[in-house]
Structures are given as C-alpha cells and as structure tokens.
Amino acid sequence: MNISLSVLDLVTYAEGTSIPEAIRNSRDLAQRCEALGYKRYWVAEHHNLEGIASSATVVLIGHLAGATQTIRVGSGGIMMPNHAPLVVAEQVGTLEAIYPGRIDLGLGRAPGTDPQTMRALRRGVREEDFGDLIAELEGYFAPPRDGQAVKAIPGAGTEVPIYILGSSLYSAHLAARLGRPYAFASHFAPAELLPALRIYREEFQPSRHLDKPYVIVGVPAMAAPTDEEADYLATSMIQRSLAILKGQRKPIPPPVREMAWSEAEHAAVAERMSLFCVGSPARIRHGFEQIVEATQADELILVSDAYRHEDRVRSYELLMQAKA
Image (cartoon, rainbow, N blue to C red; front, side, top):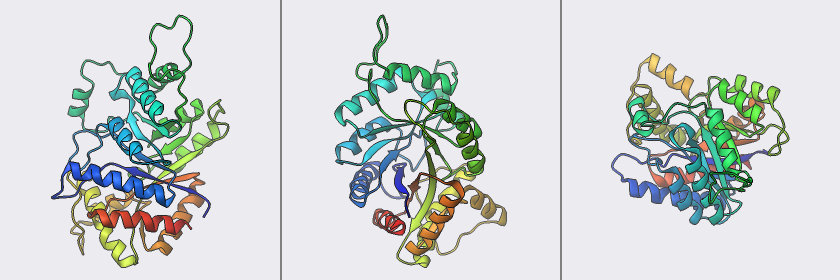
C-alpha cells in the first residue's frame, strides 16, 4: 500500500504510572518509530487533562528531536489562540536552528482544554481570528524587511513547513485559501471528514509552499498478533473515549474482556471512533485500504494508546507491517 504512515502522540500515561515515565515512553516510541520507517512524529497541545502530558508541546518536540536522527518531529498541533505568534515563531525558529530540516509546525484553533482552563491560558488576551494569527506568524517567519520593527530572532527567514489542523469545514476553507497541507482530526471527530476534504480540494489555491492539495487523515488504531488480542487491548482506548464523552478525563485504563455500557453509549463511541482500525495486520490493512479509498489521503497519522507501553510499541510495529 503506497501511503506514508506517521505517529500522533498525546504523551498519554496509564493508571498507576507517572508523567516522567510517560515522557520516557514517548522518547522510546519515537526512536522505535524512526527505525520502523514512520514519516513524522507529532505531539499535540492539551491542558488540564488527566492522562495527557503534552501541554509543553515545544519542549517535548525538542526532547524528541534530540533523541532521534532522521524522523520529522513536530506539533499536531500547537493551538494558536493560546499563544502570541511572535513567541511561536521564536520557539519553533529555535528548534529549526537546532534540528534543521526536521521540524513540522501543525497549527490548530481549538483551545485543547476546557473553558475555565482556556481563560487561564488566555488571560487578558483578546480573541483573534485563526487566519489572522497564522498570517502574523507567517510574517515573522518571512525574511526580515527593511524597517521591520519586530523580528523573530531566531525565526525570521525560517522555512518550517506549516500544516493546518482541523475537524470542521472552517479549517478546510482556510487550509485551501492558504495553500497549505491539511490534517484532519478524524481520530476523534470524523463526522465532517469527507465534506471537509472535498472543500479543501475544490477550493485549494496553489502557493509557493504547496502546488497541489496534501491531506493527512487521523486514524485511531490498535494492532496485535491476533484479532482477538487487538480487540481486547483496544478496550483501553474505547473506555477512554467513553469517559471523555461523559466529561471524565482520566489516565489510560487497563483493558477489559467486556465493556459495561448502554446502547446509547456504544453508539456515541462508535460515531466518535468510526475510523478505528483494530486487529491483526491483515485486518488492519483492510481498514487502511478502506480509509485511503474513501479519502484519497496522502498520509495517515496514527493514534495507538495501549495500557502497557510494550503493547503500544508492538502495535506500531504491526501497524507498519500492515502497510507492507
């Protein structure tokens, strides 16, 4: 199957484990995924969420880039309304100076948290349009201009690839207008995936950054040697998805043999995780083929969160096997 595979890591931690352990596990996973041939390794900004340790996204990008040699490392994404564009340009410009040609900058407009935490993050900051924030950021990355009063140092003149992230039609229109690659968060919000991709491709305006549309599709996945074991391990991700729908943010729970849920809960999780690929490599390959056929994606970015780190590593090994 001729498609690139990448990794989206929320630096999750399981019940009974620590945040330092989660960060060590992410470092180990990045190194292993590099050896397996994954294209990129992204971490995502979230705040005040039990079970997710990726709030200091730029710090983690530097840590993971320093632990690897060739794999691209970046954000999937940095939530722009939480940050001053100048700060993002300086931080990412610094990363690019340290790890040239390996840093990606995926940008989102969601808060990555709850309303109360959002207010704490954006204290005293006026609401701005996502597109305006990106335009300001691009200005700081551009070569310095005569008379420019505020420059990103480092950052000015830096060619860091920018990806527009989203889970709605708004992001599709914006990515098309900017002529940037588009990554859709269908690993947790697949409802508008196909309409958004249609809009993006129909409205795409070539830019100096990209001459034709480029689509990355988020896919939740769990692989194991047998379908039965994969189904069992996948219940950790299913339980966590159900808890999120109930407004409960908790660390990754251990897998269970049977889910205790109502028909309505089952249906809600099935809708939220409609792209979930679970099974042995043969079943996973069939799932990947269906997604690629439906979306014509250029790349799949995979989220696989097992309760045990060794099961997660094995899942990513078998997910890459499924592509072969």
